[in-house]
Figure (tube, rainbow over the protein chains, first blue to last red):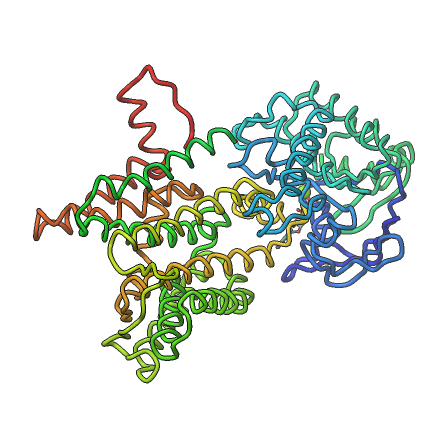
Length: 250
Length: 318
Ligand SMILES: Nc1ncnc2c1ncn2[C@@H]1O[C@H](COP(=O)(O)OP(=O)(O)O)[C@@H](O)[C@H]1O
Ligand SMILES: [Mg+2]
């Protein structure tokens, strides 16, 4: 569904991504792995419209979306979470998810300011749907907590809940297990499968190999900005180039 | 939601009862300015406190509202209400157009650009002598009137201005508790995440800038018709800074905070008159103390101060 073609990203003198080509299949859980600085986050930034690549194209179901800004991609059902959590810290957990429903609601400044009946109706629907997503991610009991006060693991879950509220067709997660303990990581693996079972395509960057090998259908390996390998978890585990790169890194 | 209603009814009750407490014209006159400044602070707070975008040019929008309304009525005999509407629409349209390039800037750069905008508007007021009357001001602006009721004394002006103030506060509170208010706060906390959530950040910033200018222009028009006079000195850079101070002292992102901030900064110079030459020092000291000890502004600081004094009472956020 998502075709990444010849993506190169140059920052000043540094080539963060070098001619990366890869395809993401609908309803797969795809893993993107590679050592620190391999360019994984940069790839996500390009796909999610935060950066425009130096060269190369991204297309979604045949439509060229390379230059689409994030807010436009959101309308196409593409959403992401962030490696360095980007929650709306001063807002409550519930409000964070309600912002995720922004594209699912219409009322403008005037109908909001004058509390038009359809605005009140919409507001009630947003609130209820937001609770549904919090329950889906198992953090509904924290609905009224200020997001900045959340423990780290719950913050990661909230990022996922907020992203799911858009009802995306594809979700990109940048290191969702970073900073989680092993029990939380197991919960995350279940959640990721649950998300896929709803028909959502999942792409995740992850360092936790056990998690990646466990949940992913396909894996892309990046090293120093280049595609090193792609394949099923088994193929990747047996790939000599991958083994060399990982052993080399120590 | 219940709490919001209670707060609002308390405000309305307080506003309605003021004329019974202060029968003398002087205090009513001061309260007229509290009302106008509250509208301005609320307008700026939508931009500064919610969306997190600074403007040091809001006195310019305020002044444009006053002058457009003033010139249309005093020079061209347009109906004052119509003039107010024209002024508000024209100023918000101007803000909308300027907003697109200017709001691409962030932080200090945005502060500089809006500062420049305010200064340019101020210079126009001074230099376009044929239209504005220049530094000596524009006089002969008529009062607003409803049929035979002419708003021409302090108590009537109080009722006029506070009707607008109370409606502005209601609309702003409604907006704050809606998807638009949440989107604005989201921009404040993480612009990139707001965009990923599908918020058209660029457009929303410009829209709120235009809305803020609209309210400021209505306040300016009220000011012109209440004073029946407008001079550039009221719309200079220092007043823009004073508005920012009201919003910060009151509490960023709190509509009622802006009411408190505007009230304090408008009343303080009047109350400090008795200290004569020392008033400006005491004024400065109070501002410093409030910012040091009430980092969330009056709206959070006063309840927690009361909470500290009455340790039994349970506290909620304002
Ligand atoms: N905005 C940027 N400006 C300059 N260099 C960047 C920028 N973003 C990433 N880089 C560089 O690109 C390389 C890849 O970074 P990144 O994509 O974050 O790696 P990963 O997520 O795989 O750890 C790093 O060397 C990083 O310093
Ligand atoms: Mg990274």
